[in-house]
Image (tube, rainbow, N blue to C red; front, side, top):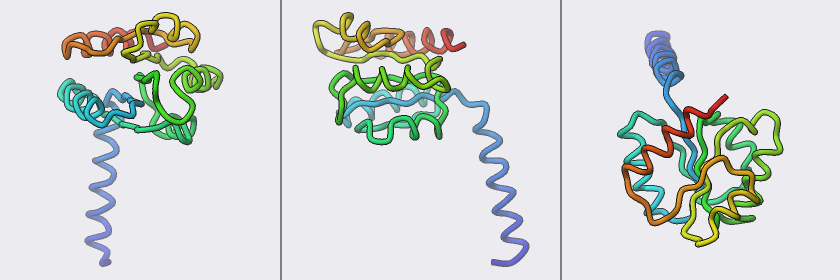
Length: 143
């Protein structure tokens, strides 16, 4: 790679990372690819940088690397489930202030969210405008 092309690549990377530093970031943990696709499409349209996850493998490291402003956590997410995953997030000092929206079709979602230590509850099925609203509410909670 010549000096000119290396400089162009570094310039691109600098501007790319610089332009993405101010973006709102959200992580979604759900094992349903259709729900991930819908949520990603809607939230990207609202200006969010979205990272979708089909499981909670390496949960803490994924969150620590991405540094989201908000997390949406499904109740039935593999491997350990949303309650355990949310408790793990809330037990880490560097992550515990990130608002977690507990997301489920379970009729006992309020109790599960409380047990998990989640900040907000969002039942499935859901309205797209309600998704935007709950994410805005969670973003306003971030300390």
